[in-house]
Length: 230
Length: 230
Image (tube, chains in turn green, yellow):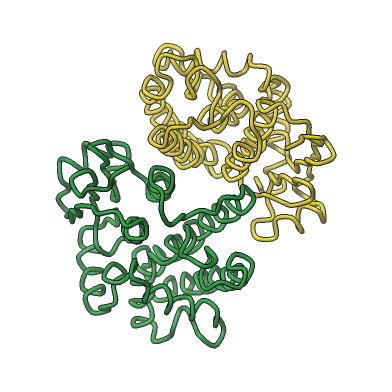
């Protein structure tokens, strides 16, 4: 299938982990797309019409047909276009990738909300940070199995688990600043710390994974004022 | 791939929506498997070893290799064996099926917990029942689009959304008894009500979807005593 920019439109928010993972995946496939930044305080008619069930970003419009929910979009991209594969070809390895991708959104995603948006006190934030560290420590253990000696969860190349986890990195930097301590601590999570450097340096992630912590923290205030992360 | 019973073992709990959907999928593919009922109050060493991350059923062991998380297992079954397809072949239709399957576990699943396990008062139960009705009403609307005139969400045959939603039917019967009102109300949800009859009557679901409400309600008491649904 052709990937002309006019065929592909992505409705997103620049800090959203769910949007960032889709952008990295589109870049990996070498697909040109039109990116439309949404205002969560005043969502576009196109967004509301394209995702009436959740009214949330990201939405990928392919020749006008909307696909919503980031992990659904990622698998759609992988199945609709050839090129760098997000998922391996062998069924058991595909199941392992889907298992860990779900784990990231289940455990890391919940802790991410708790660290930044759902905490009503520093104690609640600290508890969420502890849950995030625990989940990341589990992923540190999973990395060896998934990567099989390669630089990414996907092995030699960036795969599903990489883009799903990588979408959170901009916010991890904000948490590091707030707490004064690295969430992906190189001393206790050397594999993940090295993975983060490789992921951020990859051409598909550059310019998409936020690296300006001040800007992310300023956007956090906007989001807290809106009272919505979606 | 061969589906000899010795190759396939499923660790489950007979009332679990997540286990039931896997059993229906295995039946649809015509795969023989050994079913092992777990005691959630005293989980087997095999379960704990096979799913150390979540320590939860279902786990499908294929030639000794474990696959966990029900929606991951369903896609594994679909990809590892030929036969009746749970997912359509066209990428956009696959995305739609994954979207609605995720919706079921997100909205219906949360309401299911709220109606039966997480409610501390009748008011809380009623609020969860209202959320379940709202989610089911959305699915009533989705059915027409997904089924395309066919008898199931999957079209002519049972597909991913069917098995995912169908796994909850035994518990819906229990909720009907508790509340004195049908959750899938034939008057307001005629498509889903007719779908339920077809799904329950299908050979793949018979004997797997619980139909003895008294037995389900008795099991509910066991689960509440254990304090765990996984």
